[in-house]
Figure (cartoon, rainbow, N blue to C red):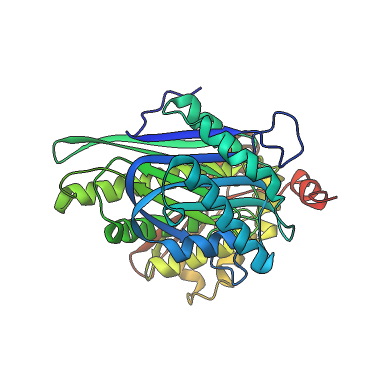
Length: 396
């Protein structure tokens, strides 16, 4: 159990519903705001979008959301009109259980693609999870466990800040371990706050935060069908504005970055969390493009796994990113060790560089360009035999 500061007027639950056919495996979660909340969302950019994504998109942004029902073990993706009807039925069951309109309830799913939902599980499971709603840390813990698939740990981040003379609390929890690629991936995240912010401002804040967090992680670059991030704000009174709104914006981004890093750290089979820092690109977009290309490279990932400081893989990935530069524009560091400067290889202690990769769970590579002021941070992981095994055996 963690020592979390929780925003007011939310309740949480997570139960084993039987969806996963695993005894005591929590697979159904419900999060409810006890008062109407502004809500915004960002979603997968895959053209094949799961039914719950389509339902959420049709309902957001809005000013009177009441919560979200989430299942793990079945993605309800590529399931046609029946999938849409089933996602709406999940929301309707949750709404009836807490006393709100169906359109005020959102829905999210994660798991295997292409299998119809066994709706009989939810006809009894959703009323059951609603009866377990709890405003305590235990409730958050149960909900955070219920959304996991192949994750090994829950992923939670919190902040408590004073804005315009009042304390505002933020809680975020997420899942994701594979099918993780920029533009989000098979990940779900839910961020809740008791700040007073309207839906239009909330949508802008979440979109910005997502670009610098969930859209800057990659496990294998595969964009899923179900990516969903929802941001709820149920505070009453005058809405935040000016500096207070800016500080809130920064706090939401910080929570999202914490969750995104936790997803990359818990990637299937991963032994390393890799931070790629890009400096001196022409702009942030070009910096992100370079970082993404390096992060998605199987050769880069296997070098990290093997503790092989084969820096040629890092710079060559930058070279095919599509960003125009000359070799002399690029310098590279692995941790604090300079390996390549202004297009010229440097002598370095290969044993020390290998030991840096072998002995550290978190490692950093920094690429500096001489093109401008564009910069970004991007997070990925290594590629291990365990990742291959897990995904080769996922449905069989």
